[in-house]
Image (cartoon, rainbow, N blue to C red; front, top):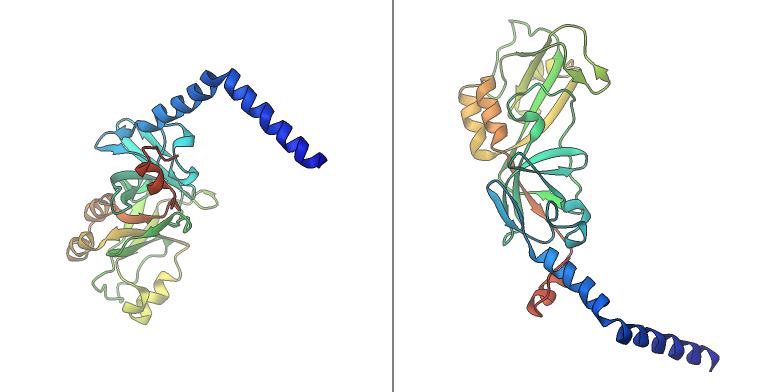
Length: 250
């Protein structure tokens, strides 16, 4: 009986506070509703709402993994410590198209990191081919024939860095492949295993054939800048019900 009396007293106290100061509660709810009614707009990425947030949309308007930033009219998102330029977002299909910012305009980033996702929120869409770049390789023997899908060498300036810090041993020799290692013969596979580092970057399927036909640095950069697709999972089963009732998800 004592516990029930305490509960009833607490509930009565809460109701009394709300009835005495209703405008404060309504004001707080209304402010959040208004803030989350706005969309994220940056460059050609516009009209973006839940689960994304950023810019004029406070963090309570979305989920933690879906923060968007706008830099010089370019939308970017950070996924597992890598920054991607957002090329497109389709809320209906829950997909977005992104490109790694460290491979825009060049293929010699300051630090080498493999592409990785937070699988709880993002997964790769279909129609993706992995391009693997091999860094800090020895000179390729002229006796090794270069098959399709394997590039001629390219160099990176010595002021670039590897995973362990500044790379200061002169210009590095590098290669890239557009196919799985199992496609190549033993000589190519053995050679690539001698390279110090490698980075895998996804690309959309249609972007790869031009690189294989003409394996130049410029064509590779163009392919990587076209980005690749991601499917997102927001775990928002109550969001649809919220919208049907006239609410805003957050």
